[in-house]
Length: 361
Ligand code: M6R
Image (cartoon, rainbow, N blue to C red; front, side):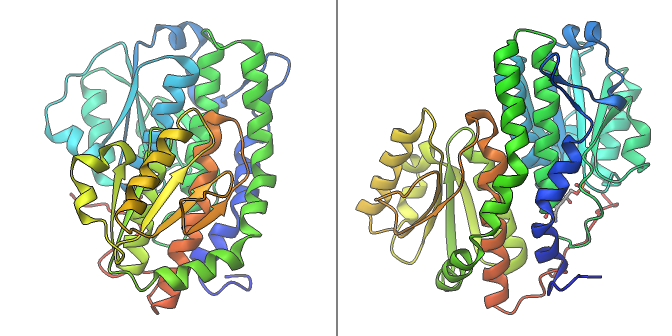
């Protein structure tokens, strides 16, 4: 039942405020400015013994893991990174007992992720799951974990589950941070930020008409560039994947800082750039990148916390805490991908060549 929406993608994009609310419900502990994650199976002593975090997933879940790794580094100061599960399992990885491994998956059935989990378990590693489907294979094979509570996701293209994965990583990062050196005041600040998310998601979705107009305009492009820096980079990668999957427009994502090392050669009026420009300590650096693009007559669509004068268009999103901004900045670009695909008459819920869960190698 699509409840009045024309596609599951559209419905699921619009379910995100409720989905995030569900992910937060019953987990926040105001007394100690932390969160409780029931199924984690990691006591404070275990949590403090973690020397490194390695996150594994595929596609959108891998991108959620990249944001998660940054949140864990920022809030808990534990070195963390994400890697495609498929790459990890084929390179005979060094498995280290002090590393906490986290397998991320919407379906909980993705074969490459499951195989990575099984290989890790065989080598004695501690593996947690960050999964949507309750009781799925990855949920069963991990030592504990977090259910992301996005609810059923039908569209092949992941939207609400991505958002809930990133929120769940925010909860985990806060929890790990508060077992270490994150102060009560910072814990409070992050909790306040988390609580603002559902309302801010509604604000972003209320801006749908502007995004639809922009999508119609940009749908003529043969190729698009997505750029972001640090927190914005995984957002750019996910937005680029979304556009490719549903519209079949070629898109690439680059760190804004890498433009001058090659991809700037591609910039010309027919190759628009979507730039993620948060109001954080890198704002001026990002503005400089916009200038470089403008100097080559590139068209720019910015997703930012305020109007960007170097950009041709800006989608303004509400500001949260710096560490949590990545959760919100991709949401307008889900709608952008949706409306681009719609303008092109694509089969939005079932893009060609793709399946909802990839249970083969
Ligand atoms: O079920 P999973 O989260 O493990 O699936 C991983 C990827 O196959 C999935 O995210 C894929 O990239 C989607 N089509 C993204 O929209």
